[in-house]
Image 1: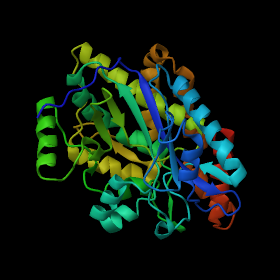
Image 2 (image 1 turned 180 degrees about the vertical axis):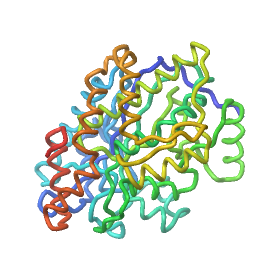
Image 3 (image 1 turned 135 degrees about the vertical axis):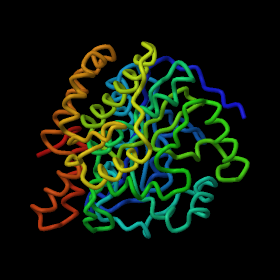
Length: 379
């Protein structure tokens, strides 16, 4: 099977941000996505270029165009959100983002009336119906198809770092889960979701996709839902690790880290250097550790089983990536990673709010709504 890889300018960037629609008074989810999409559509039957449909009617997705910097991508997302708010504000609907809604019940949610979503639910049943989760996807352009899989494998060495920074789903259905990212472990229950297989050659990847299509595991390529996957139609590596991120400042910082890592590994390949290659069993353990412990994770760094606290390794990594950030025009955004390390990731802030308010999770939703409005974490 031949899978063409689209021509893409190196290290361009695009961001996809899934947003929950919540009632301004109760904080519960509202099933008004179709109302929003109809109102913002440029004309009947046409999709808005920056605002997209999602699986559930409580969700809209905002997407950037192809950009050269994360700040440009952020400007696209801001414009999309302004358009959405012109529709949602009169409805008393707020926007919110986290890996999960703190107390909403999955049994109360409605699925978008579209054949591909109905097919997904029919096949996946109980697990598919429980996918009341939100995430962020960052696309980074790769100019050479043969770089895509080696860079994807190298990114697994920093999977835990990205997941810990973005972890924002400690609550599920009104309960404390004990996990920083409950979303990460829920999403992998879907067929073809979770950590990617280790392929170094494009022909190996093509053979895998061919097998999946022949056996009916997937009907189209996009049904491969790996946490890291090549996106042949865009010519990008799509990094799908992160939980939903509550504020624009954090979104751009974590996207900048992703952007810098991909460019760093691309430059390493150009220089003839070997990329890190974390064994699959260590990658799997790091995913669990970062989902469970978040910013307190002790991660496995390499094939020699060296370990380090995620924040200590992040501090070294940020220093190493400073020249890359200069090149990509995201020095300030990358520096925001240290702000997250200081102020705490979203799951930590959510737990703090719940503790202050005697476990009342509507207060947690209110804090997430306020952070979305402010564009930054709030104390």
